[in-house]
Amino acid sequence: MIEKIYKAFLESSGVCTDTRNIGASCFFICLKGDHFNGNDFALNALKQGAKFILVDEDRNWDSNQILIVDNCLETLQALAIYHRNTLSIPVIGLTGSNGKTTTKELFREVLSSTKKVKATIGNLNNHIGVPLSILSINKSDEIAIIEMGANAQKEIEFLSGISKPDIGYITNFGLAHLEGFGGPEGVIKGKSELYEYLLLDSKIALVNSDDPIQIDKSSGLTRILFGTSEKPPFQFSLADAKNTVSIRWNDTLVETQLTGAYNFNNIAAAVSLGVYFNIPPNEIIRAISNYAPSNHRSQWKQGLYNSLIVDCYNANPSSVELALDNLAVQTKPRAAILGDMFEMGEYAQVEHQKIIDHAIALGIEKLIFVGSHFLDCNFPPAITCIQTTQQAYDFLRNNPLKEHTILIKGSRGMTLEKLLELL
Image 1 (cartoon, rainbow, N blue to C red):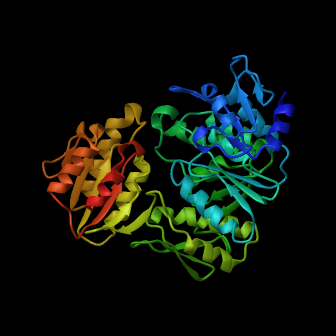
Image 2 (cartoon, rainbow, N blue to C red):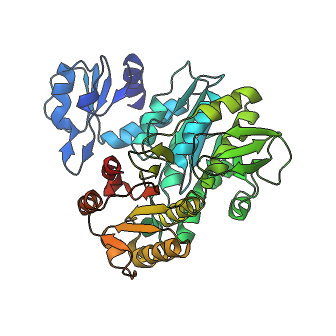
């Protein structure tokens, strides 16, 4: 059956799972969610121009363009594996607690300077997004970059089995998704499933040699090592992290548009990957320097009244602590507007309290915490703590901040970007 479905896929213009995005002659796959059933939209998809429809409910469909399977999601994943097995180009798989999407974008910028690259779009990095990313790779592509996200153990193992990376990279092991992973050790175990896949399949790992945990967990693998103590061309040093980050590589200053010293390893990894794929040094430097972050990730912006560090796409204890450290070296007066960190489970109160204590210890002049987790913590009267983003909006409208360097960071669901128009 999978051969028949793959033949239909090859005859289509590509896979689509949302009728709002249907393209001419696409292969529409009817997925299900908590509040929708793709089978309900099958006939509409045909009317909109889909060439084939994959359904998993028998509703007496009267069309040879409709293919019936037991489970559309499982078939999507099997189809991606089948397609992956036909590809001969190198596939780079990356995961980690922080910086996955930024690193993926840097990888793409560097490699696409001389090669045709297909990379994960946005953050389509889960059990649906990874198969869709694999199926988007076509014969003209020379390299693929697949981002893999997870919030529980065995998920990276599963996604690695679909993407089958030839080179793997773990950005870091941080305190993200603690509830699903079962604590810090669970995070390390879950992310290291990428290393385990690479070892079983005799593949290569790109490894930050400054991280002892990565060195330990990647033991036995063929490795591309980079770091501050490695030999050129895999040796790097941090030149500057005031406002935006600059690094030194091969006695050359490489300037970027990224903010935060925590991006040093992301930049160094992208340069190292470029070296491995024989990208000319001048093209690597140009690509890194020209990359402009977007979507509220590590962005240095000038607001109406303040200098802004906008990093509110997501948040976890590790990334928030690093962002605060970065704020601490910026021009005074400084302010931090921090939203709740989600998926902390039993660790929520202690980790939010640690963030409050760390921000106070750094001497940040103005602190505003937003969310119920922060409200459950202990904080001195001088600190502002507010339940919702709307309440924070009202507070800032009545108590405007001006001429500050402001960090805005919180989990995606807090939607702190709504505050930017006031800053």
